[in-house]
Image (cartoon, helix red, strand yellow):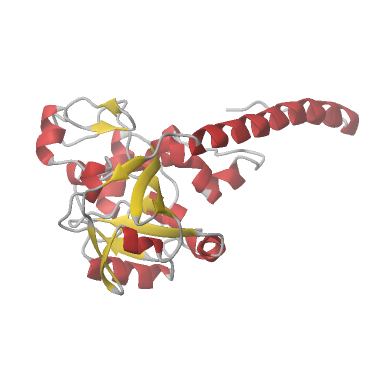
Length: 269
């Protein structure tokens, strides 16, 4: 826990100016990382993917909707789930507001999940969301972009997530060091009990829950050809989660001792 002191206004200002130097350096470093992100080699996608959407069956190119850039949030909602992951839901609560701005800046934003479209539509109505959400049910898209894994991969240690291989699951639990959907925001929320709790909130068991993973991928469309430009996972999604950006500036910070947040219609009061 961060230690707090009581000081004068002059002492606060002196400390704040020192912190400002670090914040400015972080901003410059973030700008540099963004530039390097945009300079990554582009990988041509020749494989055919099909998605079920509110407007019917679409290809990956169709999801661009006339734009040249596409951002996809890999939302944890497997076919076995009865509700979407609450961590992904907390991130997606911010999508409605800025999706329209992105769309008017040559960027389409979609969520994609493996659950059948009818489940996604029902959950979308429950949460009051309007951003586009596609089902990749029955296809290879989630597996190819490392956000869904088979039971065999899980059992035999064949899961490669966030650019590293995970140990095999030998019991109905999330072994130490495994990156799950909860670790999008903070490792402090992740424990065996927390993962089991969130799995139950999704109407499934721990093993099934963690076979789905969160992430986001970026694509470019040029002359009718789709290119993969970037993907990030786990805490690489931190910057997309507005909730944590606010908490990082609150007096107590993230102040987490376990899994604490709920879907926004599940809070009492």
